[in-house]
Amino acid sequence: MNKRRPNPKQVPDPNEPLWRSTLRVAMPLNLSYIPIGLACGILLHAAGFNTLLTGLVSLLIFSGGAQFLIATMLTINSPLLSIVLMLFFLELRYALLSSSLSPYLKGSSNRFLFMFAVSLNDENYAINYLKFATDKKWTGREALMVEHYSLLFWAASNVVGSLIGSALKIDLSIVNFALTALFLYMIVMQIKNRLTIVICLISGVLAAVCMMLTKSTLGLVISTIIASLIGFGLEATLRKRLPDSHWLWRLRSPGSKKKAVEHSDAN
Amino acid sequence: MNAVNTWNSTQHFWLIILGFIVAFIPRFFPLMLFTKRAIPEWFNEWMKFVPVSLFTALVVKDIFIDSASYALLLDKYSEMLAAVVVIIVAYRTRSMAISVVVGLIGVFILSMFMA
Image 1 (cartoon, rainbow over the protein chains, first blue to last red):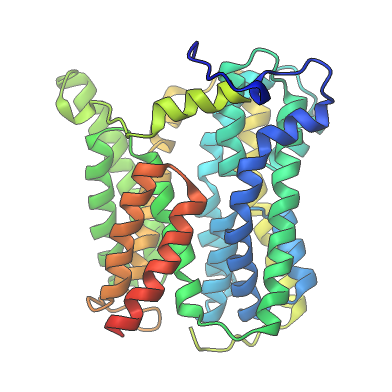
Image 2 (tube, chains in turn brown, yellow):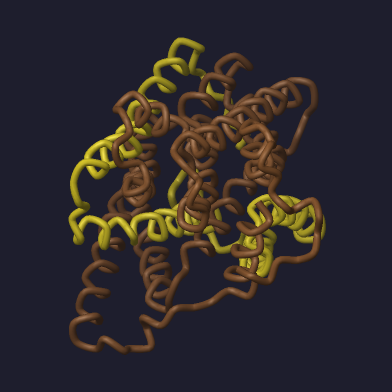
């Protein structure tokens, strides 16, 4: 952390207004939302959502994965209950994210927590978690501003995507791969040790089997519950019986650690 | 992806409201609860495996499962190859935008050659 690169732009200016310093933190994320938001807006348009509703869904649900999933499931005419159930399981991961941020938000009012929860998302979580952990001056207020900036960029790109979708004819099976790529990216970011890779493989096989058996996306829900319980059980057993098993060794990605530190330092 | 959905805007609206509720519950209640008391260990340990399991299941659905008949599909070679490319790019860059954009370009180019 003390390897600060000599770049005058990165020295924090004490007089910089809060809206600008938080915007600077949020900007890389905001920019990365643009292509994904555009793709999502195009798909939602193809699924029959009008531009107004595309804006609404981006503001209220604010989850790339969930919105892509809505679009895909609508185009294959899934029933409402099945979509909502699938969304619930998809969004369940936020229970983990929000509980891991809770130590930093102790003493906040329920009204603040409500606002914070509504605009929480995988990516702004990653930024805020890093800032909370590395920057002592980072409080809930700054974190909420980062969330709002990313929400704004996300919703705007979705709306623009929806307009593009109504103006141009686009090969949807290709745009739909944006979702697969997004999930693949999120899997890679979740891989922490060899055990996680094993769970991925188990979950993949289980998912295929369960979907072929149930002939519906309910198979996804079933396989997710089973695979996560297997992971939970396996890890607990390994920790107890073989605490230094190589399955629990941390895997380090080439870019991860160094970049994260440089990033937090730059901001 | 060619099937046209027949839902109207009112139905879409209710889908959004229901989606908002199920998206809100797991974001808000742990936050409200655990800013006031400690997180049970087992809950965290279990929840840790939910995202990986679900994302893998969704990728398998996109690449290996037919969206209409739910039969196993093993011929989407361009998607399979592009998926490998995305994994490598995500691992090396840790960037969401680069991974998604490379994936889109990859599947576009590969599908021209492999149809």
